[in-house]
Image (cartoon, rainbow, N blue to C red; front, side, top):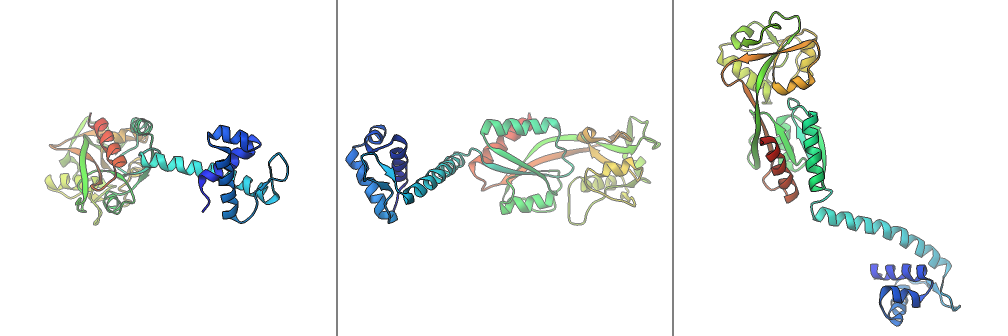
Length: 296
């Protein structure tokens, strides 16, 4: 079978114009180089080099063979180098998912960019519900997930760590009666309509909000249009209803919406990060690096 070494020898012979110069560049005996070319020709079944003249030339078949080998060898070297990088954990594509209630602020993007550059890897970031993240992490379809508890699915098989927590605010339209207040008690929202209420098969922020309302003795009333994603702020901007959101939503607040501090005990929302307990070193290293920055 033809070898990569023989292909490299052929390229060097052509580039140097003969066996003598090529042998000197390759630091091998001319006889050994000639023998390798004979073996290559026997393997492919045709003459590559025309040895009729003193100066070595390529046969017609050899010219085609040489050009194809050289072009493909460049691609093969590129493939090998990329494979080496992957083996070292470099240029690895790590897939990240985050729930819609975790905003990708400029500060977070800059953090991802810093970690990607430091570890010489690439990130792909997409939006995904908390429950779907758990399933996709277990399947290995994504590498790292960011979500807000509670999660209805079991986290068995995953490693999860809290990154940070933040206060909750009531988002209201600028003309809402509560808009000029600095704080609001949860009981004052008893008769309001909420543009985000829990989904039967999903946890996350909407469940946390519902539990806060239930602890105050009422269930959140559904607005005529609902959303559990960041688009809930657009519904508030359209004066459809109110919602309770984490502090980081201030980064994406429509101009018609005001945030009011929620005056209730334990009105905070946690953000967790998780990865598969069997994840490879590259994922674990990046996850721990991200956790260190977020937790600090």
